[in-house]
Amino acid sequence: MDFNILTDHWHWSFTGIMVGAMMLLLTLFGKFFGLSSTYRVLCAIGGAGKKVAFFRFDWKDQLWNLFFVGGIILGAFLTRHFIPESQETTLSEHTQAFMFRLGMIEKVDADQLLPFAPDKLFNTTSPLFPSAALILCFGGFLSGFGSRYAGGCTSGHFVSGLSNLQIPSLITLIFFLIGGILSTSFFLPFLLNNL
Image (cartoon, rainbow, N blue to C red; front, side, top):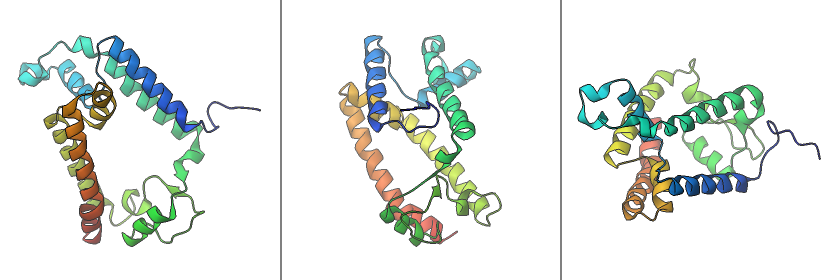
């Protein structure tokens, strides 16, 4: 079998094994994983600790987090430039029906390929793009504020917190999931129907 590492699909279990191995290594070295803490490191490197006490810490001990962010950026670059067919995917008919009701796609067809980001919202030539961009910026602000208020983001609580059997992470995740269900079921339809 001819296998191309950049274009062939890998089995989903590979990701689970790699995440599990990463968490085992982090636990052995006494580290905790979380993406939102990387922003804290970057702010501390930039000198934010001179004005805000939250950023006064030994950021050199957290530099390993930057490699993770670098991996995300590198992975996105490789995906965009070397695996262009992965920019489109087939979605379940149930998901497509939900998107159709919200006006995000034109038809429901089990075989149609769809971009990860619907053109109606993310295409800069779309009449809805300015409103969608404002909503995304506001949502990003709320996500950043919420992750700091909760003491971490979903990756930190889901992956690191739960694997270390932390009850606060379990409680936080329950509210993350409730917020996600409310956003998808009520807030998103309300916003899209009123754009």
